[in-house]
Image (cartoon, rainbow, N blue to C red; front, side, top):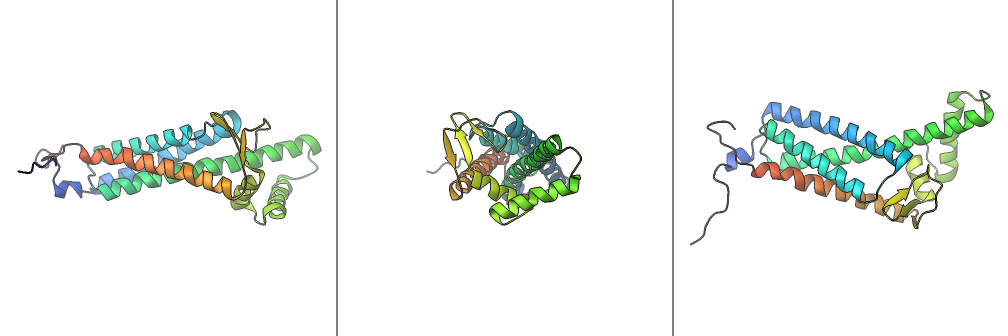
Length: 213
């Protein structure tokens, strides 16, 4: 005799529910959480410290937790929808983090140029000079050029932290080129994997259609 372990209060119908307000709430939480947490991590990584794997794991848990809570509040029970938004939140979070580092890097270079040459160069000339450096070094300007330049310079890993392009302290292990991209890919997988795992817990929360709670 087989015994069903499925929660009787969570039916197949409720598992696929995506109310309009719940969908809108998921969008808002994804944007806000990704932007805020990603920005905080970028500032910490560039100016303070970034703990390898610990920070990505924390980012994933925060993303999953935020989507899980939003799903509960919005009465969203679709496994696929919750998983999708958790992954999107993690990706946005990591994207904002990396783009934030790019902005901080450009600002640091601009400040250094102004400190050395004063007002001889305009802000536009300084920014054009940064892009010219990226093109000369890696063949691409802008954010993509920064990422390739960053990978070429090397992702310096230390025990418990890492050295960024703003950090001159020695690293225990430096990953360059393809190895740096693989490491970044591992961080993305860790973030999105934990985010999806954490968020899916919301689906198993008992839900009663009759009482709508």
